[in-house]
Structures are given as C-alpha cells and as structure tokens.
Length: 113
Length: 116
Image (cartoon, rainbow over all chains, first blue to last red; front, side, top):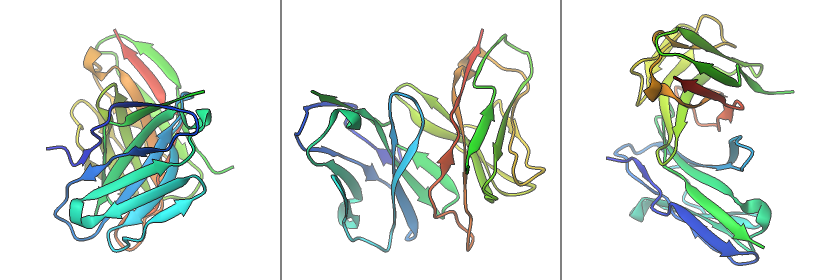
C-alpha cells in the first residue's frame, strides 16, 4: 500500500488562481515527519516545509500555506495567487522514525499565464 | 557552499557493465540516502545510511550496493546494470540527531542513467 498518496497527477490553473495540492499519508507510528518538496523544470529538488506529528499548527509562508490534519492523515499544500514560477512537480514525503523516507508520486502543477 | 555533489551527471552504459555513481556532501551530515525517480512513481528510496559503516535497505534495493566508509561519501554501485535500472538518481543528505532524521534532506543535482 502506498504510504503517501498524491491523488492529483496533474493540475493546471490560470495565473493568480489559488490551488491546493492534496497529500494523504499512512503510518502507524505516533512520531513521524512530513515534508513537501518542489521540483521545477530544471530538475533539482527544493525543500519547502517539514512538519512533525506533534505539531498540527497550520503554517503560512508568503503565498504558501500548509494544512496538517492528523484526523484525516492529510498534509495539504495551498498556493495563493499562483504565479508561472510555481509551475513544477510537487512531492509530499513521510519519514517514520526519521530513517526511511516515502515520497508520493508527485503532482505536476502548470500555471498558465 | 553547502552542497551535495554527484558524478557523473549523465551516463549511458550497456547491460552488465559495472558502474559507480559517486555522492559527496560537505555539510558533515550523518544521514545519506539514494533515490531513483521514475515517471509516475515519484522518488523511491534505494538505500540509506545513518552514519559511517551503517547502511540499510530502502524500498527498492535490488540490483544496487552502497558503502559508507567515510562520512562525506556514499557511492551507489550497480554491479550488473540492467535496462530496468534506467532512471534518474538522486543522492541526499541530512542531519541526524536523537536517533532520527528530522531535518530536511539536501539533494544532489541528479544523475541520469541509461542502460542499453
């Protein structure tokens, strides 16, 4: 079974629209870490955020915000007022005990000018 | 500059010819890991290492070997490459504290491997 599910394979939005990328995870551990990474067309992997299982506070960083809900095992990522530079593949990842990492299959976001 | 380097960046080889992809980090990180990225499958962990001489299998270790003789280096070895190992490979490193890796991983630029 997939430990991290990103059901949205591809999303297209028009510039300035808001977009939410879904991430659902599965774990039996009480201590775990969740991450989001961005992979722009150039190919590198860029860290965006880390959350531990004890911290359910939502976070906002500029146009980016994250909604962590343990009750639904979800860690969703919202981009407000999307820009063309946001076009990338976004990966959600889970680390149990911080040792082995599990990545989702990624969501390819295209922002149309 | 803090970074993870991988070499080579691109490699085309033939089935059965042993190859090594090197990975080096200059951040004194304890944790290092290898991933492969394939279309529609995301990133899958091959092997990881929590410190020198400590390595563990990830989700897809078959056909790969690793070693961690020095803290900064974590080479990926394909003893007998096959076409199904054609992929984009990433090395990553991270701090490791209190028995777990809770900090973000820093990724190398990737190595695109083609096995004919």
